[in-house]
Image (cartoon, rainbow, N blue to C red; front, side, top):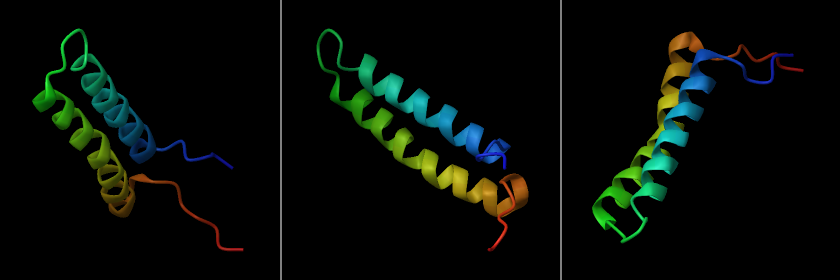
Length: 65
């Protein structure tokens, strides 16, 4: 069992971390709401990116039990 170690999973996690980092930095020291919103959108888009990459064959193959 690989626990999701695939290019799709790694890419989704790294994009998500990038979005969270951007959103967090945008709040220091004075909130910059446009950058915060962009970071949130990137974070939410990471799930879609992971799904698309998995559908393209870059995810872990599931074994139906």
